[in-house]
Length: 461
Image (cartoon, rainbow, N blue to C red):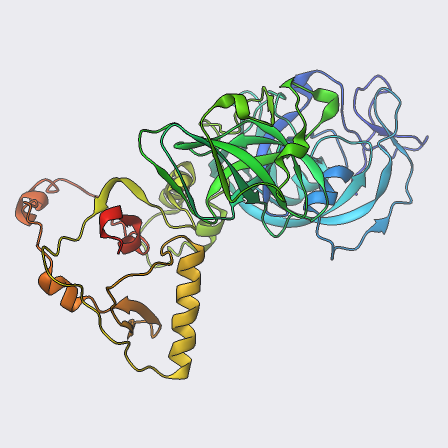
């Protein structure tokens, strides 16, 4: 652990001893003393504090009880007490090992666990020196010394400092009519603790908007209010990301209306309780700034950047860093869950043809297990839904080039009676003519693109 000696008039935190050992953090000093940056703590996104004057990295005891790894051992803290500038102790409990994703890398770091510390985490110069963080306060940028071309935004605006963005995912499949509200059950990821905690909710969905509200999360579940502000019905799929939950701070309360949260108990809420009037809202509405920051580089890119293989490319080191920076800038395009367009629906017109029903193909027990697994997976992701239909088509597994099996349905007889939809497509030679002066080419492959266009409701039988 690094040590430093600062003048006694310093506003940073310092240990209560007379030697040169001094660990410094600031809790009440001017906004210019701290910087904030987006990072992940134990795989949960948040805004963390940067303090180059602190010799320690500190994590909040409250936040650790929610996102902490229970298998991580707690080493008791035996050092000197750590006091803030106002004289109060941060009450250090011990040392814990935390996974921190920052500046495009993931590092396990030994961190002080403090009870009297309200922010998510404060990153001190011990971690900054370890990974080589460089700060440009004038340009509000941060980068690693080994990767100067891959820069991240930092800010001195502390209005959202310490914010936690625990994702809230839908647990059910339901439909919300146009211009209606509903109460839906959501859950946090499995990495979140099952302890009971109060959270402020912010919406992230564009079509179905989640109300900014206060909720009580119990065993990872809670109920939130959402509104369909579109002229079309909106389908909610299991696993759909609806909002983020942040640990509620009663000492910094911006709440404009507080009503009993117990009325949102998941035990008395229907799977999708539709209401048509905002007078029937039983949640706390608060004034909170959006968690979206269009000017910030997010860390969704961590997963696909580590899988990016450019060993066979002709790009220079500078071009490679520019490419990675571009991918990070548009990381919202790289989503683990399947996307779904609402611009067009797929219609199947069979005219007056009678329904076609075929027997299943015979498959081995091993392939039966694969089919069952794939069906369960698609059902959980909202790709398919249970139904009773006079139509039936057999499932077949076709080998891919890499040796894995592709889940397919034999629709050949259905295709034979389907009225084809003809429309003009661009000529390939005209398209190539448009590229005659281009130097760089790219291709895009949508993962499971067949599932990204919904069937029209009239064609789902």
